[in-house]
Image 1 (tube, rainbow, N blue to C red):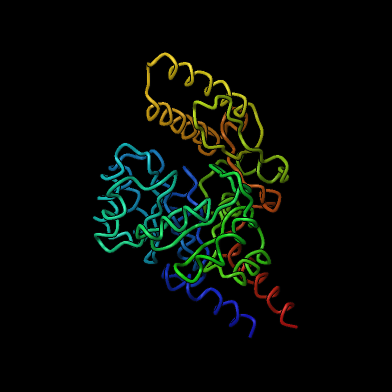
Image 2: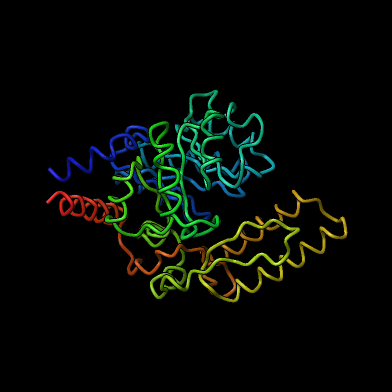
Length: 337
């Protein structure tokens, strides 16, 4: 009966995504690639390829490789400031990718139409209620409400606050998925009862057996506690840098130096604002690769959410999803008693 209750609460999100469990995997650059994405979709969740700084050719190959590993639906996460965004949208359309996630800012003019033209469903991040309303008016099919507890790029407001603010207003209009700081099924049950269609988790999946992340990267997660996942500091208000949450290491200090370098280039007129922001994004992509692929856990970026303290061992994706669903079902059972 409890499992039926959980399935009922997740039904809208599961139907929208085309999967058994309305659990999206957050797009983590270098981590959310063919192996992890296909494993999550095969286990009944919804995998999302992190396009990041990929070229259209690389994304084309990644989608094809993922399709070879799963017959289940999966999505692609695209960054709005990518200089070849519309070419990437065309690649998704070529492969009939059913869901596209736009991240990193407001969708540029024409991008929503370009994505939906081929029948894909569009998911966008809503860090505030006003923006959530604007996105839905623009034709977005679903929203992700992600709080500051998340890993990687974050906003300034906690997940619990955003959920209380946005779910009562928007959940009856479009499916809303809650993200940020979710590490156990009890939290999933709570957000579903508040009206969420499902949830998104990243950090919990980063160290799965199927994740290609370097053993040293995974070990850093196993050792970390919630307080070790800190947000980067913006040093120059003229350079609007979205904060990034990662485990504190030498790479954290290197980013401060990088901001100074880019701010000086901006001041001198050597680069414009768009180029300055792209340089910052490319820095993160490179720093993340150092940690995830090369295992440089001191100089690279260990992007992690505050739920990292709940990541204690390497385990298969199917076990992680199974445990989360069991915890959520048990929580609902206790509340019904």
